[in-house]
Length: 581
Image (cartoon, rainbow, N blue to C red; front, side, top):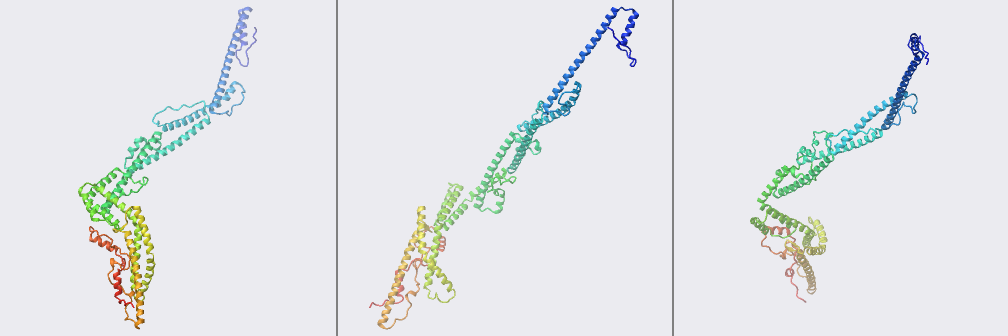
């Protein structure tokens, strides 16, 4: 194999041709045969082929590696795009073009950019998931337990997934904010309740959770479900305690006021317990003053009530008599007759015997007072009508006296006033029968409802009304008889004048003579007195009591009509009847 080669005069390098020429010269000089020369040249040629082949193989391997690298780069690019949720990267041609190295060169910047973006996205995911994990731990109550960092799913680092985590984080942050607000409200409520109840707030709140004390920041407070539940139970327990204490304090305040009123306690002594009595009618929510329901305050009130109870026991007689006086006053206003002396003797006997507790005795008297007030209320309507009836009877008595006055029409001082009063009195007197009928009907209805007789200062009211009706009727009959006698007398006088031609000496007319004799039962014209002869005498009542009721029941003197004997003396006192013709 002939190899044509020579020295390159420009480069001055040793080439294959120059070396072959040099070898020819050596062979010529040595005298090497052609066979040896061909054999050696074939060997050289084979060695060159081996070198070329080796280089080709190496180049082929290098190309394969580049292709694998390019494929891996493309696969990695595709994975990154998929993980990051990107469709493509700016600067990368859509179709493969150029040499392998050119393609690798075009992909490398994109890969570097995507790797940086992936690292940033991983950090964002890690931060969001760490916050989610921390808040979830706080809600679950595991904030004190150190948990490993959350694992980020590198296969899905898209913005959509990141937005989902961020939305979840925002919801958790909102829930955390709401829970913190609830915790702060609960803590504030516990603080207020502890202040009112006089309880140590720090020990109460740290029993729920140590992080709830005032020194801890809001962000470090426990917001777990268990903490919220325990806070709610604590608030309910404190509110129930507040309610019970207020009820207890109000009971003590009521007892204090009752005992003060019972024993006429001075205003100075009462002011010492204004902090107790000021909440007697307050609701639970209205009591907010610090220490208003503290246990020492309640115990102080209990001690005072116990002291007043003991004092009340020592003053039982005075208190009982005071209650009895109140009871008698109610009966007196209701015109119910009672025996005060016997009642006081009974009270003294009960106190001295010791068989009745002082509180029971006072309670019994209080019950009697309540029943007396109820009875007085049931009698009020009838008593009002009785007062109207008696007032009308007084006007009727005055009208009778006014009608007997011969000088009533004289132009004297005050005559016009009496004339107006007489006009009103006549109108009122005409209403008496209807008033009596209404009073009788209401009295009978009351007696049917209560199953007992209605008495007025011990006298049955129906008996009073019946007697008044009867005496009024008798008075009307007496008036009619007197009118008939006067008419007869005038007729006799006229006949006598006609017979004898002269009139008798003038004398006062029968109808104008004013009666000066005593009035039976305190009345002369049939109107009722308030002190009735039907009233049975009660020897146990004191003279002062009788005088008091007599003064209260004094009435015009016109309850009973004149007797027939008084009427006869009234007629005979004027002029004897002439003999019949």
